[in-house]
Length: 122
Image 1 (cartoon, helix red, strand yellow):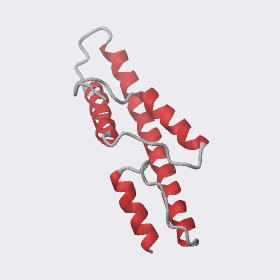
Image 2 (cartoon, rainbow, N blue to C red):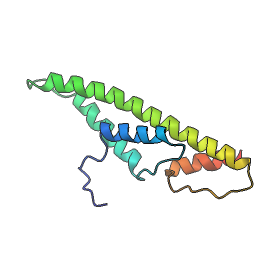
Image 3 (tube, rainbow, N blue to C red):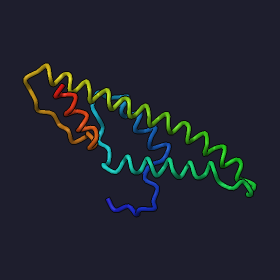
Image 4 (cartoon, one colour):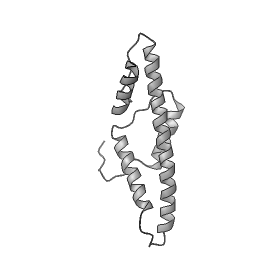
């Protein structure tokens, strides 16, 4: 995928769509390896808007909207994180109870693979 660094990669709508996909299935959905970096950039951008100068006529309204979006985005991210962690822990638990240790880890982010391996070893 050829996306310029300054292009928006994550939006509130993207986060909402990911949450819906995660809720609808017991399987982990594949996320881009740079997903967390993109989320961080999105949050930083929204945070900057919340601290922006209010001199323009639309500044106050834009700031209120950004504050609400930032708060809601944080809630979405927390829910996505919790759902994915729950799925990983349950997968590790189920795998520890069976003799079949073949699992597709391709949908896991790097830190999620570490969590999976640690949970499986316990």
